[in-house]
Image (cartoon, rainbow, N blue to C red; front, side, top):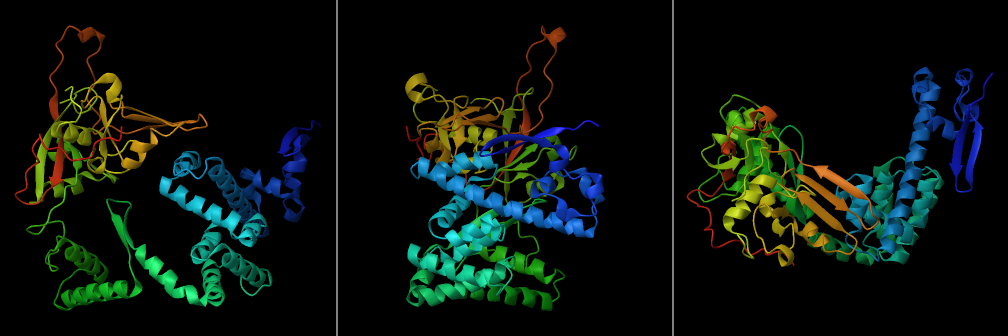
Length: 479
């Protein structure tokens, strides 16, 4: 019999142990309590042989492991934040390695700082596998407006209740309610101050969804939100009672959109802009999709791909303005339109059409800066080939010590190098697939002229025209 040894690592070093000590043998499937936690985590196909008791135990191991991983992540994020002296770009560095958005990384850093500095009992519960990061986040949210001493007081009292069995640690909603009640007990006089501070943080968020849909979140004072919903619900029910065949949910959504866009609430098509209301939204479509020959390649800036039939519905909307963009027949990349410091409006619009969004995030290009890819001070060239769309955040990030941002507009490839030397590459899809370039046997043939291959739809205010080329927006790059 041949024994296989497997390396097991720890802070003390590496130990080689027999595989049966790490992975459960088939004979052990009837006694899962004999397996070590590391053995559970190394299981793959063996899970298919578990009975109900074993499957439930596997879930328990997964829960504890996630909780401990969340604790490790919190400590690592807090340490990185300390090493970077609280730089605003810590979130960018963490997001690249955690493979999440910068906004998610920012929230995790805030949670990490609260857990390590203000909520030691909650962090210990994560280490023990009692809480997961989601539950810990609820406690962080409830206590974030308290000073450090009061937050620790709430943390200790809550921990006593949880460990005393007064409620299940897995019920995040119950724990949040308990934490909120303790906050009121610990700091009753601060309730009004916290409420005013929360109201000052009201905001609107747009979150991209699936199937050409997005969600608009309005974070409002409770009484304002309740009043707004009551108005929406009242109008929706009135339309329904008058014979409108849309569902109440559809009516509420359409009424809310109509109110925001100053449209008649009874119109079933809420995509038609009302007189005097307009905004620019870029929709990129290959010409064959516009003509109904294909359903591929349509893309909405800031959102991503949308179905061809939906894109054509937008294209035929009376409020849409069609503009053509010439693209290279081989690569599908829009072509260069000066050696001047400020870009012309034509350059800006070409870069907007070509890049569609910031290469490093999903901010639509029309809301980004025009950035010189090679510094103006060294190349003295302002052109579409030496320009790119870059959001304000990433525009400033490239000048931070230790960071490097590179972008190739021809291949739509963006690369970020972090202060630790790690490199992350992202390649954007071209607007259209392009056409194959002539092979070696056809080199003698003249190069074809760029052709119209993309249509951009802009939602403009009726009667509005593009701003003159001599009057570009005042968003000069910060260098």
